[in-house]
Length: 227
Image (tube, rainbow, N blue to C red; front, top):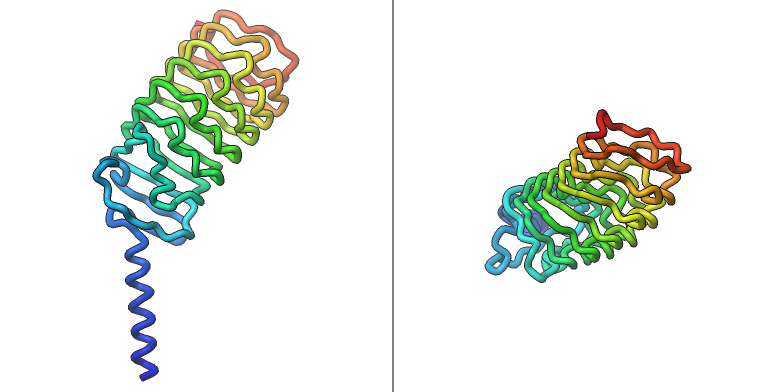
């Protein structure tokens, strides 16, 4: 009888573990990788993830343009790291990441994003590292990073950004690393980095900057040309 009870318990654990990992995913204790998990949102099957993982990597196609918080639907709101790089993303609904209040690292690089709504990262107040590199973004709204006071690393190289609003980074007081290389910037507002006293690396090579205003900041500037 004792042996039988043990076998039942072990079997139950295995079944539950399988049910808590979607078929298109590979799950570990705190890390999950999935392919095309958000590719067909209207027809996607409701599945449940195990609650202990904190890092998610998605490959394939991801649809974030529909007005739904997919992370809330699947009860995966405890993420601290989310990698959505090279997922063919073209548009992001303004509240797509609202339930991810613990998010610290977000990678959206290598997609086809053209615009970022000013509310996209509003609820991600703990965000430390954000990558929007290698997209097609032309403009960043003034209040895009208004609540991201812990943001330390920002990667926006390889876009089509033409200008930076003077107040764009005013609340990101913990900036240390900003990469704006290979955009279409022609100048930098003299007050653009006035509140970023910890900023030591500012990459701006490959832009069209002819001159730069001297500010009170001592920044290690990395650029190889002003053309």
